Amino acid sequence: MTHPPKYAQQYFVKDNCLFETGNNKQGAYTKKLCNFAPGAIREIMRDDGISFERYVQLGGIHQSGRQLPEITIPAGDVEGLGWIVKYWGMDCILEPGLKTKASVWNAIQSTALDMERITVFATTGWRHVDGNWRYLLPGDEQHTVELPGKMHGYGMERSYNQLDIQTAASLLWQSVAPEEIMLPLLSFTFLSPLNHFLKAAGCEPKFVMLLSGKTGSRKSTLAALMLSFFGKFTASELPLSFRDTSNSILLNAFSLKDVLTVIDDLHPSSRMEEPKMNGTAQAIMRAYGDRTGKGRLRADSTPMESRPPQGNAIITAEFAPDIGESGTARYFALELKEKDVDLGTLTAFQNEADDGTLQRCMFAYTEWLRENFLFSEESVQEFQKYLCTRFLFYRDRFREDGIQCHGRVPETVAQLEIGMEFFLRFLHEWGGFADDWCHGIFERFKSILTRLARNQSDSIDEDKPPHVFIHKLFSLLESEKVCLLKKNEIHDFVPQHCIGYEDEAWIYLHTDIAHRMVRKLCDEQGESFTIKPKGLLKALAEEDLIKTSAGQNTVSIRINGKSKRLMCLDKHKAKDIAEEAL
Image 1 (cartoon, rainbow, N blue to C red):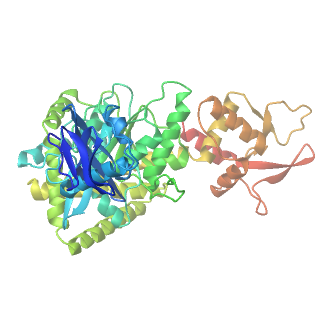
Image 2: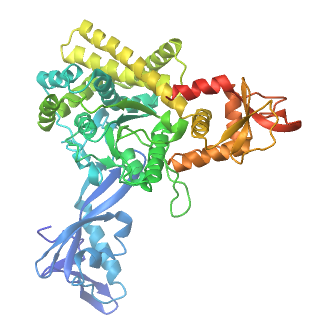
Image 3: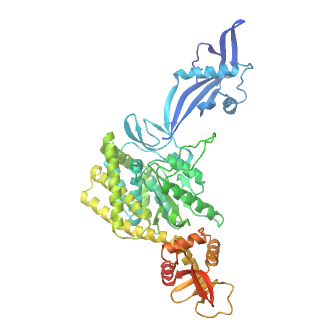
């Protein structure tokens, strides 16, 4: 603010100090209010898609001629004037008087009549603005988009040419990494701008992509390359990290609507750090897997609106986190081996990303979506119906293939197929790629997804509490930390580490003792096993792994002439499960 602001008639500025004129019982008066001239510069409406927050930008001139720094504070904090000393210093002095503060506040308000008013969008992605759909990212020349702190890399170049599209498309066949890695990553990337409409259609993606690999496998670099469709990123400058708190990650995840993000470096550096990182991973999986935000209360104890993740996320990790069956079902795993990445090809694409090529391709993709599907209210509704129809088609087709899997796996496969379908349609219609070529890519992608989904289903099974219990039970038996006695023999002495009995067909276990020993082993290995004995029996019964009797999950067995209630574990089924882990 280089000049004193324009005040209402009763206020004026002299020597950069604010004065008030008026009349009272003693007649006309002129009163100095403060030794500076404050004023409102602009009003900012911060819109995050759920609520509006109003802010005021203030500036001023000190009597010394010093420009007071422009500050932005919540509109409700302006009247109290406590911000003056906080931001402008002790030498900004209000004159004494009962009504001085009220007069200064009124003077500032009077400058607001001519101030600029702007809307700042606090989330990315699709918004219906001024009657049109627009895909928002920082750098938009028509609308201001502001993201917090580490999100500064997001942005979009709002122009494109055919070469940009063709260069990005070459990721489908160039040997940056094997197809089993690149095709799912690309489908996930181009699925992200569809999230808004998939949610409206009732089939929002509810999983994250887990990209695992040893140190040096270039997993973070490859994830950064995918993220470069939405801005400028490198492996050392990714927006989110497991060094952040889960609350911080999920708060930022709400802002990143209809875009991809990366949560980097799931790699505990110590035994003590592992539970913390696994807890963060569990919170992230549940937030993205359920699309629910953390419940919060306002100062008056009324509930705040939920703020769930609104985009898609890649997690990079050295190994899959220990987060149990439900957590594992909420991610889709890709494993990057040490020499999978072609460094020369990767470098070439990194240079393209640095030049903005991938951003321009994504802009072309969102423009293609807007022009083909978002040109009227009716077209948007038809688009959402189509997305729902395709989701159901892909999901049900996968189910019909007969793969035994967790119920979330077919839905994840369907979402990834939608992402690839739209990417290839875009390449065909705006990139000039032949329909037969696109069809061939899609068929290869389907085959890859089927293989990956089988692996994912096996991982989920391994994390089921009954399977964990059996794996650990056999480990304990093989290491002779526990033992079983023959059921049909007479035993004068029972070893202290005996947990049950066995015959040719069954393993008869003391439920509480076996459960305690398995849980102890999991604790020693830094793994979680939180299911209670009663819940374990129920889960084993549901998978037909134990014998039940009269609605009970334990059976009365005679041992040495005495009746005992034991868990009766099917020996052959249990061995099959234990051998699957080898």
